[in-house]
Amino acid sequence: TPKKGRVRNNIHALRTARGWSQAELAEKVGATRQTINAIEQEKYAPSLELAFRIARAFDLAFQKVWSFEGPQ
Image 1 (cartoon, one colour):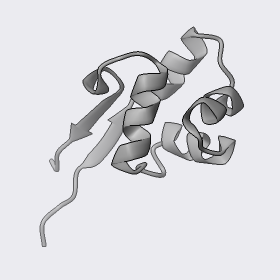
Image 2 (image 1 turned 90 degrees about the vertical axis):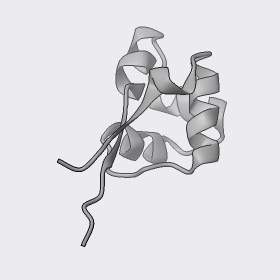
Image 3 (image 1 turned 135 degrees about the vertical axis):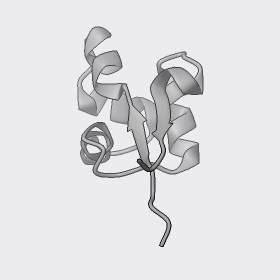
Image 4 (image 1 turned 180 degrees about the vertical axis):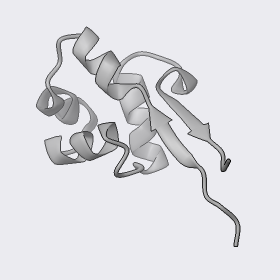
């Protein structure tokens, strides 16, 4: 069976650098604080739409927020 890769993100560092709480980011992107928490901890990979909304909230290119780590 093929091994899966992982979606990685820089959300925690980006969010704290801006002084935003998880709840503030969640409100900006139309998600719950719990969802933002799970995404930051890489326990949950968001939909592509939500991933783009998060990048837009930071006013950054998608690749500055998200990366994909392929199987080892």
